[in-house]
Image 1 (cartoon, rainbow, N blue to C red):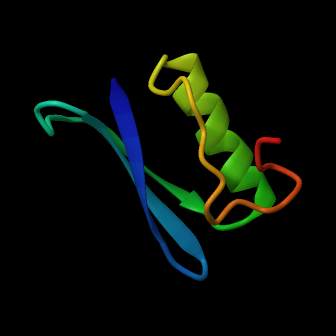
Image 2 (cartoon, rainbow, N blue to C red):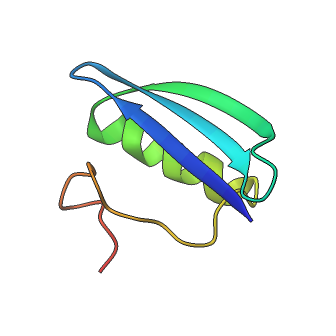
Image 3 (cartoon, helix red, strand yellow):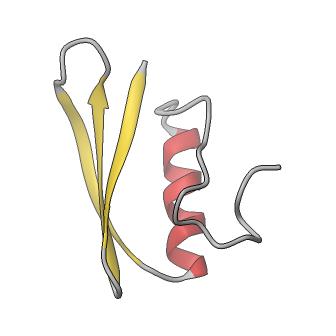
Amino acid sequence: MIVIGADTHKRTHALAAVEEGTGRQRGTREIKSEEAGHLAALRAGHANSMTSECGNRGLSARLAPV
């Protein structure tokens, strides 16, 4: 499984995708900490089969899974 971690800041968030068992880095991305940036990160993760589940810590209420 690929895990996406985030280092969140006021204006930007740094994301890293790593393999769960090995910790091998699969990719990184920096997004703006606004709704459009959050949507871009979710789309990128799902489009690249990087994630099958999504947590909601730090996401705006509108984007958080139900």
